Image (cartoon, rainbow, N blue to C red):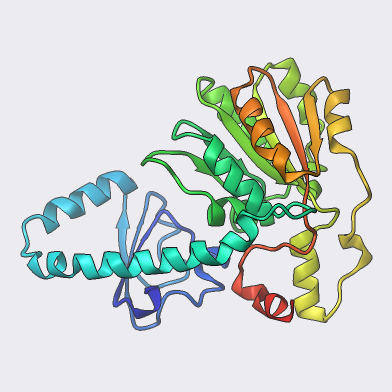
Length: 297
């Protein structure tokens, strides 16, 4: 639908590679309106009508103006557009059911996200580390209500930011549950913060997706060079044991049936809790950059 658009409104986006499907998503002939509080971001990649200001206030002003116009044609087409969008969502859900409902071992990340979806609420803050962790979160989870918080890095964000950011999110809103999704590679950069989390009594639920590899790096090397280096393969690290050594309660899960009980326990706990999930190293989020790998599989 984006490829068919004659007008695209960009709100608070840096129009980086990941946010634009390698700058292919927005059609060349479309008019672009870019809204951002930072004028440096507007027009960085796409020539645009530049609206500098707070996103919420700017959108409110635009809606007020639209309310003065004849929108009967838009209203008449709304049902057809909504039906088409529903068709896309239904197709997506049908395709991912093979992974989100499976009881296969090793555990599929889609299964982890599906079970997390049933355990969280609109008050839950979801944090993701960089790389595939953020793609699992933004591609698989859905907000229950406007204003629900999903904190994810894009662009050149550093691998390993997830746990420290989750601690900050919990300190900022201690009354709300916080869960963070990290890979084993990203977690290796910041697991020492567990000691701080325990000492500061910040009850964060940490989900470590342990597949024994740097997934994005492996797939990027494979697509670009036809093979990947040994640097992508990680050692057999027991992250639950590391967590317990820091005073953090932890479990290691290999059976998908254990996911929901442990997720519910963690999200309701008053202490930090780590869930290490042994996941399928062959799993990757749907990403056009790696489509040929999915087709080969």
